[in-house]
Length: 340
Ligand SMILES: [Zn+2]
Image (cartoon, rainbow, N blue to C red; front, top):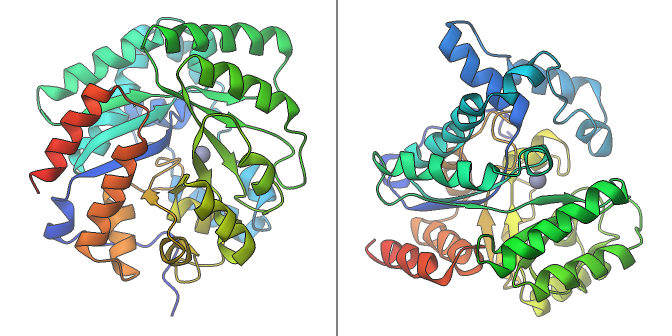
């Protein structure tokens, strides 16, 4: 019988203590802040499990479900303007990841990058704060760049990321091009990726979560090191071959793919096809609050699907190899992993 998409997966002690890395986590500002404020106010947070069940029963798999993601709670806009609330929700992301054995969490702030130019320092301060309790934990930030936004918003952001790249403050960026499920025009994406790559940034892109059509075009992005999802390439041998030949690493988000319907079940997820084709993969939470998952649960899910402890350590190693971090940090993290 197929595993329930929202199943509580017991995390065996030997998996719990494995060093993990999660290099695809969205900030989920509103769901995350709701969770933080609920704890502070002694109330129940929004029930994301019930929401996911409703979503799976109501909407068709794929794009229809995706449209429901990241709809903010309007009353939280004011609360989020407060710097202490911002730090609290970032600490909450890191805390959740570190508690599950993460040695690296790479987060993708969305609106924060536009509205809070000082967010980079604040996020680094949050990570520093966490290291008092989790000394081996490191954090990285990569901007999530929505390419369809207005030019007068997009251009200053890209300029800022170029500057941050040249100053060694950030090491990568995530591009989101549309249309997502039919063939998109990538001309603008290539131009921006080229500028960012010239400023020293590695590139990843959300692609082929629900449809394989954009894989060949995405593989031509300048500076491309990784792909977010790329799930549908797993069902097409010629695309799988192209992905393998390109040398990029694929960020796999099992729960997100099953709940949003990119794949029918955990058991039919093409994760093993990627591994067998020689594509390096990593395990990621993507939207952990909305998907009711954690990085520990994602590793436990992969273990449940038959991946050994050594395979899981390989996934962490793959993540560290392509993490968008400084070379010093990569060395430290790799040494941490080698201690295993
Ligand atoms: Zn994502």
